[in-house]
Length: 376
Image 1 (tube, rainbow, N blue to C red):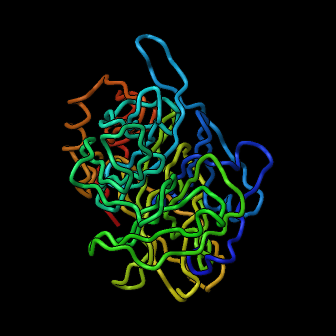
Image 2 (image 1 turned 30 degrees about the horizontal axis):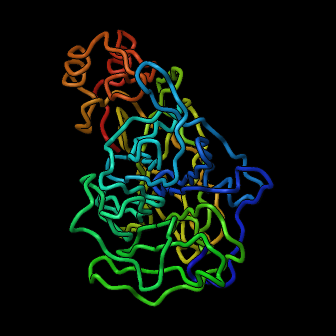
């Protein structure tokens, strides 16, 4: 639902199968990617794919290890933590707990178990990494409401639901507010509630557009999906790389006009050359610069011209070898690489310059080949 026109919601994606029936939902705005769960299936698509009207929806099975056995686990709530760059999931049984979900494999690691007989049907994170949850209660010792659950032990942080409200299963946090989304038909649950976190007060509610009851509800705060967002697209090349299986590099960007920052975020790169999609408000026009940086790569600046419509930014190549992030490829980068020489990583580490998943002689070669180069 676009909050600028809540009574006339527009569909980004629809399907007759489980893929369009979210139990939980999370937006990784920095990655321009939307995640949603249906039982133990994790679905996801990029914002660019969603805006196309016919997205290619990817899926993973969500599992966790019980003893020595891998088992499916259903997630009724999802949240993206922008501080630790993690996808979180809440499960309502048999263990009521919060998990960290690996977005490459679907394997979930227990973060902490909830107490007081509560399961959280909706969760989300604020920009400082605080985790909020809306509680369904299976115990007379606890109360339904909005909780701060970062500690894993709900207590004095309870904010009761509005009077007469009895069941809220979806939640999104953003702009200093928590949006509490019901899953019932509007005749029985007519409102989506807005809670002002800083001032500890409920604001005017939004009319619910839902005509029929559902088992769950999902919500996410995704400003980069708004209707006034246009696409800035192009390709990015990470030089001197030979990506191994499941290896990712996370490259940060900021789009600026002079000192004014128009948008910041990150992209996940899994190949030497990849397409990028950056959201830009249609009100931004004129000359701008994309500043790129991340991992073992030197910063680069890419000039673009914004038109208020979708625009192609062209291609950019990032030079490699600055694994200590000093802004220069030098002897310190060799020292850092030698200190972890031979180590294997399934994910990401700056000293693995060539993204092969192993720190070896090839990474030293990358540093030597770029020795003396500096940030742009």
